[in-house]
Image (cartoon, rainbow, N blue to C red; front, side, top):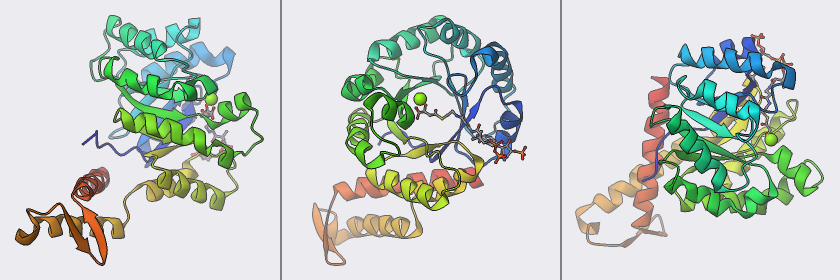
Length: 293
Ligand SMILES: CC(C)(COP(=O)(O)OP(=O)(O)OC[C@H]1O[C@@H](n2cnc3c(N)ncnc32)[C@H](O)[C@@H]1OP(=O)(O)O)[C@@H](O)C(=O)NCCC(=O)NCCSC(=O)C[C@H](O)C(=O)O
Ligand SMILES: [Mg+2]
């Protein structure tokens, strides 16, 4: 079974926004994503870098996974971000505008040379057409980057721009999303759906969360605290899925079914592969319950 870590809600905030960094410490997001790239203005980058390194090192985010999006690592800002963050204690470094796995391998080596803990993860933004075309090769870096690569994150704004798809363009993006999802699953890493930018459209946001969940994503990148609860609800197994998963395990555990690969439950054929799905559902539900404990 691949890693069980709730990543239903990945709340982004500019690294330059001191108020957001404090507020994030009390918000129910699974992941706090602090952005030193596009969300931080060029003139504010140096001060933001120092502020973010200090905030991460202070370890005030509790159980939340802390991820810092650096500037492209081949730039001066990106190199300075890595140097400042490598040993600050972030759970992961998110690399923007990845095009090939070489960038991730270079970031992995740089983190090692900078003395980053071995459990510092690398996440990759998939937001260029080349990254979608190379999705399998990029996800395959999970075997190379010291085992650090643990999530691909969709960047719909950059994708729409580069592909010249007319916004909002969600349906046009679905084949691109599924290409990324297949790559992530092939290498057993997480896939996080991209941002929904219309903060006034709560119904549209919920619908997009439900779609992202049904497509197979593990969670969604968010831009505002008001999006956390709907995302947490959408990407968690619901009561019916949990009951169904328990039932599935009971059925295959029954003495009369132990030697069978396939049985009928409520008129539907189920196979032993559904046991694995059920175990994952229950493990995720337990991990989410532990967050609330
Ligand atoms: C979008 C915003 C600029 C709106 O900000 P604002 O008008 O201040 O919102 P509110 O007045 O409604 O805020 C209410 C309170 O919530 C706090 N807040 C708001 N947003 C956040 C946040 N993201 N994280 C933490 N806290 C937040 C405010 O401070 C208020 O608190 P209080 O003072 O107690 O009342 C703003 O929401 C924002 O900046 N959002 C994040 C933008 C961002 O990070 N963008 C980069 C990521 S998007 C991306 O990566 C796209 C991708 O690359 C692609 O290509 O698609
Ligand atoms: Mg982007």
